Image (cartoon, rainbow, N blue to C red):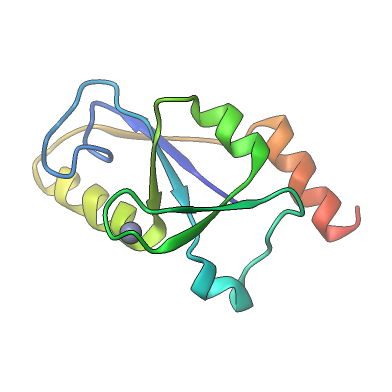
Length: 108
Ligand SMILES: [Zn+2]
């Protein structure tokens, strides 16, 4: 279950503010006891803290090849900092492919 903030770089800039930067928010592998992991998920690393994170196939497609992959902790910190700077952040709703992955995992 990944979310994709998309905006003016606020969520993805790490303080840098890259225009149109897309960040794919991913859950840490270490936190999997509390979340649902799609069967086709692969392990990658957070671009900031290097923690292992889950990334699903549909999320990679939705985010695009240039998206920064961040764990939920780092993404939250970046979004908070961006909001304090007054930068715009938008969150993309799950794509049909991401919803399908979740439904598969839930057996629906
Ligand atoms: Zn991180």
